[in-house]
Image 1: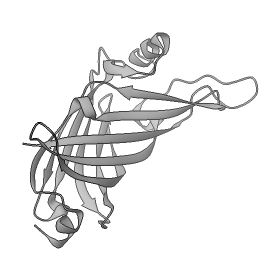
Image 2: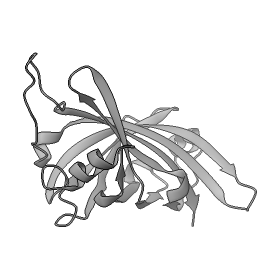
Image 3: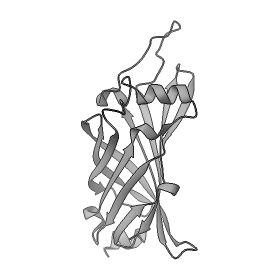
Length: 184
């Protein structure tokens, strides 16, 4: 294991995301006065930690129909053509392309985010939460990641102008990810 991976104490090998303990969430401004949060309930993925952390990789897939904001009407709108168009584009995905800026607390994970067949680069600021063995004998690793995107870059263009100025849905979306991964 390299000194960087050793400093982070991430065991090398393959790790599978635990969907029951992993969340991919997003935050958007609504009517420019409040934040609305949502989560994708159906997430899967794999992390491969290499001896040299810079050669590590991660992939994830989210089912767009699993979006949940706590409002059935809003969720139906997000699944429709104005946003994710879940019938045509059932999956959004992430595939890493590099690791950089490694410190004892975390690193930057660059990769390609694909939504509605549009692929664009993103950078995730990742914090490493540590490793622990659960009561069932599984070795788990925890990661927290965050980024901000311009949703229109992926064809998520729906909006409505407000009489008071501004728009109904912010263009900037914050994505927050909490990962619990089990060593394969």
